[in-house]
Image 1 (cartoon, rainbow, N blue to C red):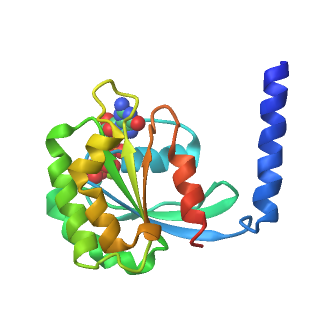
Image 2: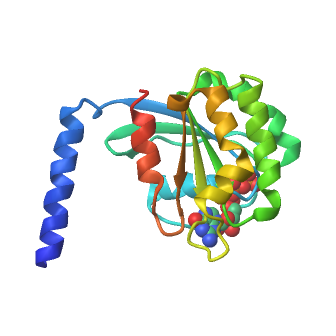
Length: 193
Ligand SMILES: Nc1nc2c(ncn2[C@@H]2O[C@H](COP(=O)(O)OP(=O)(O)OP(=O)(O)O)[C@@H](O)[C@H]2O)c(=O)[nH]1
Ligand SMILES: [Mg+2]
């Protein structure tokens, strides 16, 4: 093990002990994965469960994952289809979850307005009023990925914050492909469990 790897490993064990001491270990959470089709929901869940990335056909009906662990917390998630024809199912599953993860394809500028419309419906109509919402801006590995500012503007994030309450909504830049960013979102969600 190199000097640098040694330091990273010590930091990682220290963080793990701190996490346990803070009482997060042993907690459980149920997640609801929402977002337009092609945003990366199923890919993220597969990566969380197995550590691998592979491709999937579009999700046509709600599917509950097996349990998986992230940051010492056990999660289970409803993977929902994002196609317009099945979006009407989203609201039926909100009551079963402790947090909503709403995935956005950061590289798909042309569909940002559509994502904004769906978020506005969920939050504006108080469908997710009782649960925290983590907006995960996925595919940040791509050159054409929009900046955080562009996404915030496109999604009218400040309006969403006002409607949902600032402490109950947060935004994260992630890349499921590279395995980056979603850990912070899970740490944020853990505070609500
Ligand atoms: N570049 C890049 N591609 C990604 C990333 N995450 C997912 N993808 C790709 O995005 C496509 C759609 O991924 P899915 O996980 O099937 O999307 P989904 O949100 O489950 O879509 P529906 O089931 O139709 O709602 C696939 O080709 C993935 O490989 C990422 O972080 N970066
Ligand atoms: Mg899917």
